[in-house]
Image 1 (cartoon, rainbow, N blue to C red):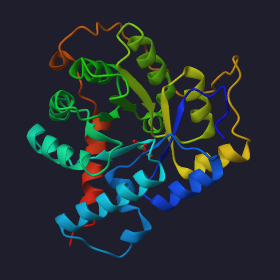
Image 2: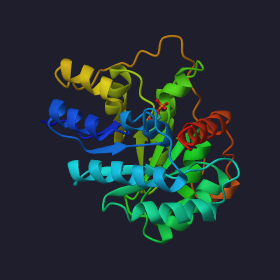
Image 3: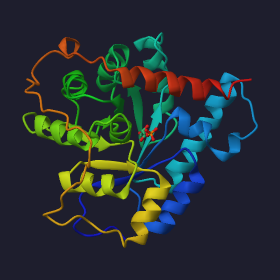
Length: 282
Ligand code: E4P
């Protein structure tokens, strides 16, 4: 059962419905699930198989429909295919199609110029979005600005803490900075802590009051073994030698194209998602 004092929503980060079942068995609750092209490429049912583009999309649809049936009241994130040449129109077309697959979808667009443009239009059309591959406060500000007018719950922003840690930067400090910046806004964007590598990340996200945190099954298993512990008020996150990311004063009233959204990890992440997806092609 979900601990009573736990306000943060707990998602599973996986492209495998078997893991959804296991997470439900372990936790006895699950608030949602995030998928992405790399996670789908690691679904055991793809092992040794090759797909046409249409077959692969059909496979992805089947996976999210199964997940959606398992957690009908949760949110399920589905990611569009994008590489650096994919236009906003193309992403939007995919997003519309994917949004029709299940009643509880959030569509993941990359936090690039084209991805933001797609999200801006998606929100106007009533499509819920999850902006992915976020590594900077400027990107989070652009997400806020591009989705103004959306209802709370319709927009998630996903900063990737683990990938920042891996290059020596304290990913959790970015979560802290974005939450602080969003306090100056209207609260329409929910922070989804992603790329979680440890129970310590999970506890820190809960302590910071991140709205959502998505974790691989192994972290949820470890957390279960620790009795679904929640951080005490004096919880101190130990980032060891990781360099803190400084807070930037950013005016959220700016127009989204005015923010500096470039980040090398976004480019690398996009390439990796694209390569993993294409590795499944015939
Ligand atoms: C979730 O939405 C993200 O795609 C995921 O957490 C990324 O995690 P990774 O850094 O382990 O690939």
